[in-house]
Length: 88
Image (cartoon, rainbow, N blue to C red; front, side, top):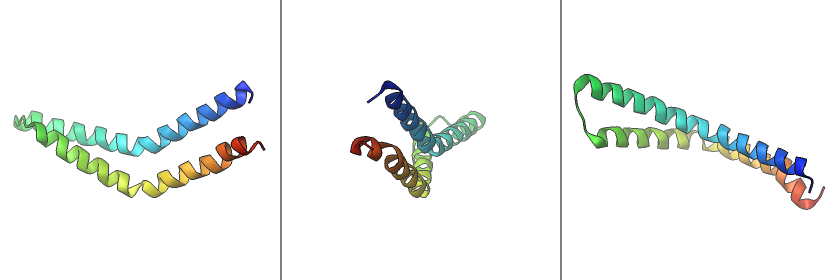
């Protein structure tokens, strides 16, 4: 395998992983900022108040975007990795 093919496939895989993780990470960021602002405004400093809603929101978004993530990963494998493995 040539180096350029290896690095291009690696670059595509990293970009796919960024695209797949973006919705979950954005929701975690927004939820964390919202809860942090709420805690700062009300002076409530409870550790579970930041953890539980953030994990719940991340699980909800992950569940909602599972088909998008699966389609993206399957298309990457079918278009890039399987032809490389098969030697085409």
